Image (cartoon, rainbow, N blue to C red; front, side, top):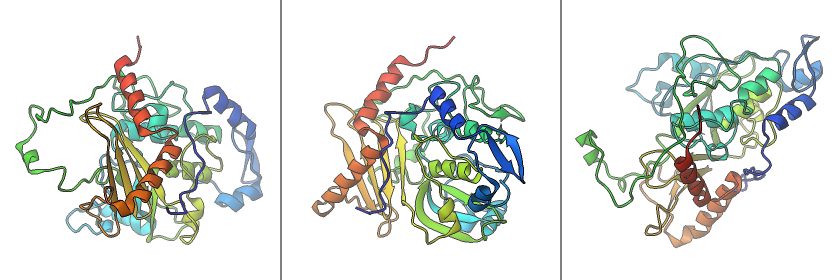
Length: 376
């Protein structure tokens, strides 16, 4: 197993709730020294010297742009000669492009709420596009930044419930007007009849042909640009996720995220491409149009996917790919004896990071779907 896979287990136990978050953020300090002057703010207390050492003489304004359903390969700077992305190509020339960044769920709401809350989707029970975070005042990246003296604005679509903004002040036209119910369902694993209205073109696709599970949907474009600090045109090939971006934003803002959040700051790696990095990412899918949920671990050159058991009559499925030798994911190595030890090691690591086995996660998801939300 890659020795970079070293991180403390951050399961569902001991999570920081609203009161714990308020206590935690207040304990960090009551001021930030900016330009030699103190401003009142709930956040990490840093001296002017400490700010200079960690993030330079000034804290940056931060603009985080999300392009919807944007596969990482759909970019001129990624070598795509068909698509025209001149503005993003310019950003890549001015910034650092990450070749192996993953969202933590390949679906809009679980991905965005995972990023909002700083935790894996299963840890905050955001299973599908019909979900919200456990409470309206749940600790969020916006609230962490607000406590550090920033003002957090939301412009555009984050798929939030109409009643929740999680610390953001919304500007521009509201595109967050859905009403979440928390309900969902599973398909019958023996019923392969397609839904009505599905294009006949899908008859030409076969699951055994090229898995692509959590590859084309979960690997996303990531470019980070701050020309005052980092030279443009750089690339990082190591594996990371949007939860790492979450922690990175917090450090650049001169603060840090609560201790029970997932993800790690990439600031040191941004500063030095030779710096050590954990080189792994996790993504999960427990939403619609599936027989059962699944979870993925990308670690270095290998990608492992565990498909939970649909019912008592069907066994779980596993996939393992060597992405250096097989970038198209045509050759599933999970059933080959020489890879048995790696499969088990990656599964154990996945369970440690998530805090429970995906089989338990799938059962929690089904239970939540049955109950849904009680709302007026």
